[in-house]
Image (tube, rainbow, N blue to C red; front, side):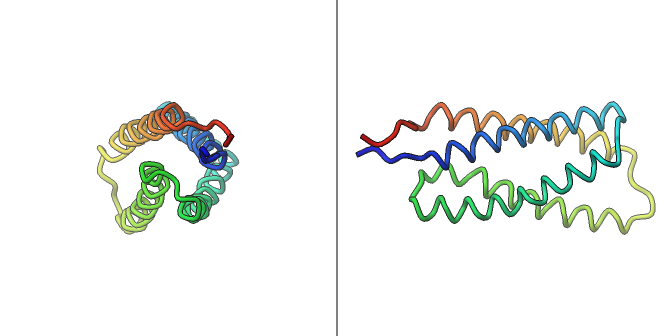
Length: 132
């Protein structure tokens, strides 16, 4: 009997969506386009996505999902914690280095492409056919 990993497929599609949103956000930041409502909405979505990843780690553990599927939620949790600490540290500086904003945008684009690529890879690799 094949397992039915509909919850993994849902997670990967949502991760693909968030990777795309993050990529768009990086391009908008590069173009210096910013709206307060957009920034607030995006912050709320990514904050909720943090807890979404914790929830799905628990679901993955209960259903004994392939270990490779754990990579994305763990990556999200570690990267969000790292960026939170980095933001706290940088907020204490009076002057930010001139290279910081372009480096952050480039890093954001690279990580977004990784997130989307890995989600697509897992969507293609894992057999999501219902159990027979």
